[in-house]
Length: 140
Image 1 (cartoon, rainbow, N blue to C red):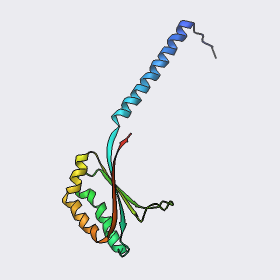
Image 2 (cartoon, one colour):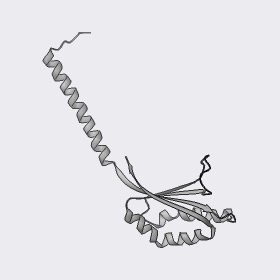
Image 3 (cartoon, helix red, strand yellow):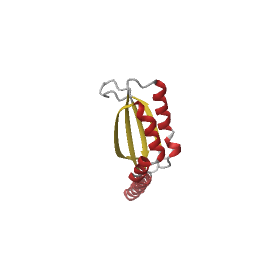
Image 4 (cartoon, rainbow, N blue to C red):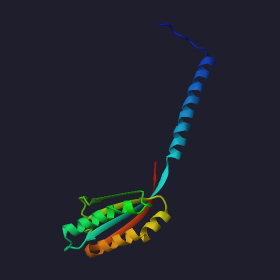
């Protein structure tokens, strides 16, 4: 294998080219990250059901909540799960629903939407307690 030797000026030029290439790559990454950054409004809803609520009644609430996404276009995503924390700090709240919106207006429209109001009527007979927290998150 033949060894190539570069003089100081050539080495400096190669270093500059490599440095410029790295800076260009970093610039592309930063611009891509900025373009893919979206803000989302998370609407967290926690339920505690009455002791006498039947399993079928609770299931009807779960199904009705999950059905809201097809009925309300401002909902970008919805998911839910049961409390599984070992800390025992849930104060009886067993169900967590997470609804995603892209604006305050979308969330506010959801709150007064006829499908949401109909869901509340399904929920009422079984509900003991509800806690709602909304927060903004940047998703990169």
